[in-house]
Amino acid sequence: MNYKLAKQLKEAGFPQEEGIGGWIEKDESINVFRSFEPSVKYPTLEEVIEELGEHFKSLEFRTNGEEDCYLATSTIDTGHYSTAKTPLEAVSNLYIKLKE
Image (tube, rainbow, N blue to C red; front, side):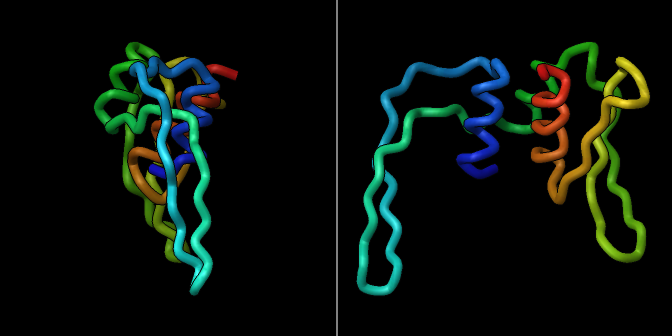
């Protein structure tokens, strides 16, 4: 999971732990960039599934010849699903979609 997805989860209402943020350093050749990023929780797959609760239906691996992906589906209706390259991203995106 990357910072952008973790932040989207936070903005969608995913429960957060107390924190103050931290410094991120990136070494781009000779230049070093420092930035302060607000604290966000990087949940596990199990934590996101638990937060979805009864709205989580299934997670399956799909291969279509061109690009493999994971499909996360909801119990709400057939229009609530998400695909991504990893199981955590698929379920996280489903959580975000259901909170919209």
